[in-house]
Image (cartoon, rainbow, N blue to C red; front, side, top):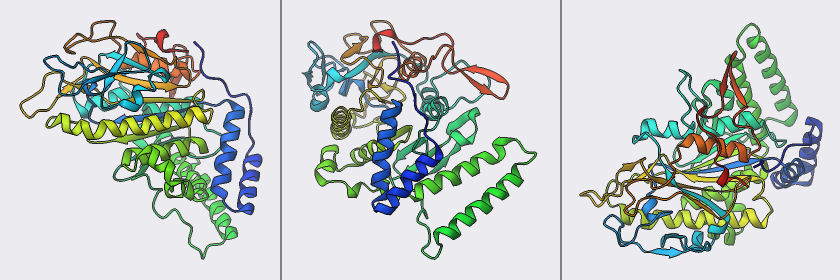
Length: 426
C-alpha cells in the first residue's frame, strides 16, 4: 500500500530559468515550459491531484448507485459496466466502459446535511475539532508535497464566476497556501505586462519590490508578508505562461472529446495545468442542488461528467500519467432516495457515493453497498476522514504519522480515529 513514487531529483532555480530562457528564444515559450515541466515531473516521479467537485451534491441514484425498479429508483435504467456484475446509471455510458480503471465507494456516510457547513467539512476531511481551521485538501496537499519544479501555483481552482486568490482555503497553514481561482477558466486580470515596460525595467521593478518586502517583513511574523510576496512571485511565472490558459489553442477534436460545455473545457484546462506542473487542481461544477426537477437536471449534467471524466481518464492513460495523478470525483453529500413534491431529491449524507482513479489507487474496485431502496448503508460505512487517510497514503504520505504544525502545535493531517481503507490502495 505504497504511494505512486517519491521525489528523487532536485531541480535548481538556474536549471529552470535556463529552460525558460531557451523556450523564450525559440518562441512558443508556454508550450516548451509545459513539456519541460512534464518531463521533470516524470523524472522526479512526482505526485499531483485533480479534484472534480460537483457542488450541491450529485445524486448517487442517477450515477454510481442506481436502484431501477424500486420505489425511489427514478426513471433511468442501470447498465452493465466493464466490471462483471457492476451496474451504473444509463446516464454514464462512457464511464461504464471505464469502470475497470476506477474505484467507487458506495457506502459514504457523513454527518452534515447543509451546504454552508458541509462543504468545508468534506474539503477539510472533517478532522477532530481542536479549535483551529484546517486547510482544504488542495492547500494541505500543496503544503505536504511542496512545490513542483515548474514554479507554477501549487493549488489552482478552476471555477465558473469570479476568480482571485482565495487565502481562506489555507486555514492555519497561512495564506501562502491559498487557492489561485481562475474564474471562468480565465487567467487573472491584467496579467499581460504593458508593452512600454521592457524586460530590464520589469526586473528592476521586481528587485525594488523585493527590497521593500524585506524591509516590511523585518520584525513582523512571516505570515504578515509572505502571502503578498508569494502572489507576486506566482504572477511573474503566470505572466510568462499566459497561453497555458487558452484552450482555444488546442485542436478542435480534443476540445470536442471533453465536451464544449463548461465542465468539459475546465477539465481539459485542468489536464493542461497538471501537465505543466501544477500540484493540485480543483475543477468545480455548480448547479447540482436539485431540490426540484432532479431528473431533467441530471439528464443534462451527468452526461457532461461522463464525457469529461472519460476523456480525462483516456488521456492520462495514453500519456502515461495515471500512475502519477490522483483523480477524485465527489461532492459534499448525495441526494435523498425519497422524491419530494417538486420531483426533486434533497440533501442526503446518510448514504452516498464518490469515485477516484490513478495514483496509488487500486482500479476496478466498487466498495460498499446500500440497501435495496438506497435509504441507508448496508455494509461498512466510511466517513470522509478515512478517505483523506486513503488519498494521502496513495500520494506517498504516511497519514497516521505525518503532522501539520500550527505554530508550535503539532496536528494530525487527518482524523485521529480513522485510517486508510486498504481495499482502495494499490
